[in-house]
Length: 237
Image (cartoon, rainbow, N blue to C red; front, side, top):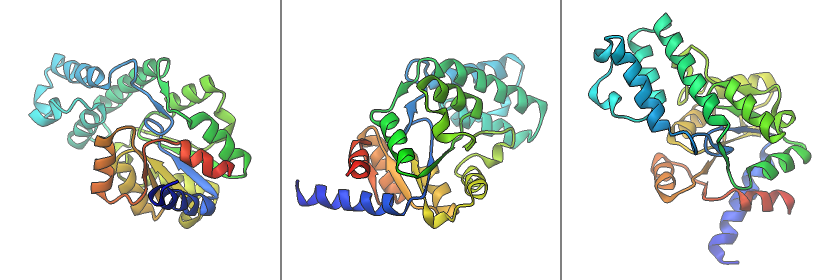
């Protein structure tokens, strides 16, 4: 083992030893939700749906071309907060996510890591910008529901509460009676890191490629892993 690898293992051990509660982002650390059902296409369909109703002007050019369904959804909510339009659009996104869940690709080592962490006494929760209905459907398909239930905190129609707002993290901590310092957030985006910092929860970055790792490090993440395997090894050790 190199000194660099030993140092990374020590950092992981330091994070896991303190973590009585583990808050997981969903799309990324647990699975690739849109592995078989492109998020780009979903965003495009939401934009087309708006344009088909004469609402082209609701989005800026950058928002239309973002290829991120959450950017489209938030943009409409900023201009028409709490409206029926937002509710319909959010439900359309939820249906697309439910469709995607059936072809989602499990993140390598996520399932055994979740089961192992639960077995050694940690309590687990989901804190995500995806619909909780989608999370529950996916967890049920993998036999993981009991590892998290009832602590699944996802998107509501109060879209200003989406990460980077720490709302879903705080909901999880409050429901579980956990101090932020006794928790750990696992996320794969700068918005996950920002929410964790705001909630005062230690953060572990998961990045499936170097581009995502670079974004996390540039945002200030101190510990970033490209695989969950070393984390599983630390827990089993």
